[in-house]
Length: 398
Ligand SMILES: [Zn+2]
View 1 (cartoon, helix red, strand yellow):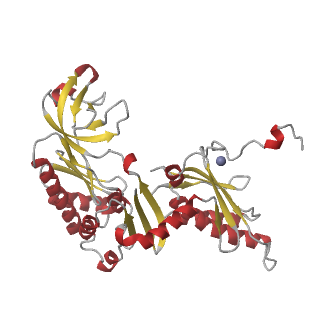
View 2 (cartoon, helix red, strand yellow; view 1 turned 90 degrees about the horizontal axis):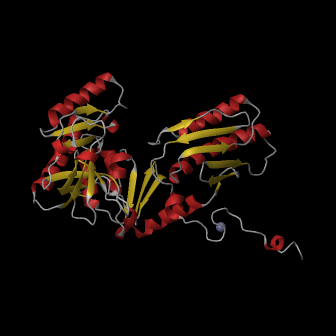
View 3 (spheres, helix red, strand yellow; view 1 turned 90 degrees about the vertical axis):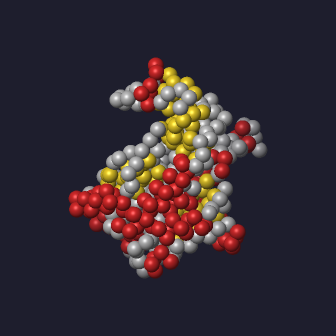
């Protein structure tokens, strides 16, 4: 198992786990051999050197038919776009796209594009010009969101390393088989979630040297003191700190989370949604109930957001805050929730308080939750959380 965690300002913010047996093959690149072209289906089978041949299929609306793209017996470079199943081989594409941190590189393409999420026209233009200068012929590239504000040396450094690595992999040998395993879990976290200043902790199948090299390229031209705060801990020298991660993981699988003020929240993840209940601790007479409720709700908003990210919760999340009579206080709590999700890379929509005082969120699903990954359905209650009362079954006879 590979564990990766990311801390922001010294606080653990997210945890990823990957089991070797469940590792997706999406993104892997193979040198394959076309074994059968089926013009009627606009598809072709490609031998990959694996147990099952992959399926290459052009979209129904594609301009070129499969016959124009590949011939039987031909060697092609293909990328897995969808995992295979027990019955079917993986889905393949003839247009590989290689994600980096600042760019997605596309061998064989010619585009020089900028992520739609960078909206500033001047910045878009600046990045497009950088791509025109630094991306070698034979590659297309898209500047990713994180490229906003990046200097040319950082983009050029990453593009150079990626393009060279690609040429080396494709240029060596002609045998059918895997030529690029795609990024590891730790690399994906660094590419997609890490920002300078965050600490990354990784254990398991981690190549710490490769990760440090990647970080050195990404932080080129940036504040060096920020880059220094990155920690990559390989499994062997991280045993002690691994205990801390394990403890956090165990806590993230519990439903009850204590608040410092004495209150607590209960996180209940079920199939359709996640319900989070906020409870006050002891009522302290010094303050009015409304003040106690507001203070507890504000603390709960912070802790709830932290738990949502730690547990990788997504989809509909409904929070039952402590009832408050003042609309101004409700708005304060709602604003606190919005603020807490600002650092989150997953997009979260925060609704308005309902008439009955519930707040509803919708967080974009990017991966299974920790609970989905690390637990199995209880054999005794089959996931319902309750078993038949034996007394009742016997007819209540005592
Ligand atoms: Zn049970």
